Length: 212
Image 1 (cartoon, rainbow, N blue to C red):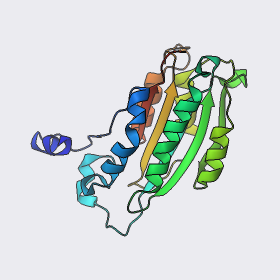
Image 2 (tube, rainbow, N blue to C red):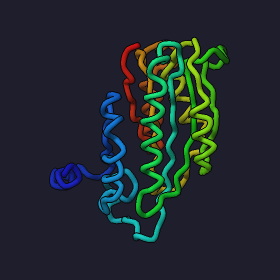
Image 3 (cartoon, rainbow, N blue to C red):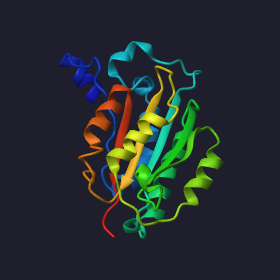
Image 4 (cartoon, rainbow, N blue to C red):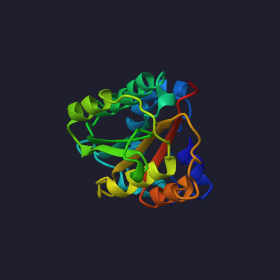
């Protein structure tokens, strides 16, 4: 419906239409929503609606890069298992989409104990099609006690990961945490980082995981 309204209003060119999952409950409901979305012919192309004339044929495999950017600070102790389980449900559903996508997953954490000089941000794996490897690293995570610099984490995910150059690729960051995104904003504001991501056709889906 949004795509149709955008075309009627004459504002489809360059418009990105994506689902928004803002809470943990939304994330729980996300897998079937995404599975249905990616099964729609009108959405099986670049996130830019203006590319509607470049629909893929059923035999083509769409590239999907999904970066998991996860808060592992101490305040996530009672939330980590639930969040990573739900995020992986989304990965699993995407891997079973039709046609089967070229799905790659990357894992970045923030809020750990080190390295302090690097914003407590760790890239555990760049994009990989080995989902077992990504899953293993995700499940091996434990909560620690660093600072949660969301803007810095977004910068790292956008700039250091090997994002697909396929013009029809879907590029998504799932950013999950439970603190304000404005921590250390004077040095690493999430707003320009998000603007940079938009310029690279990277969608940031921020999930508030809840309180302690």
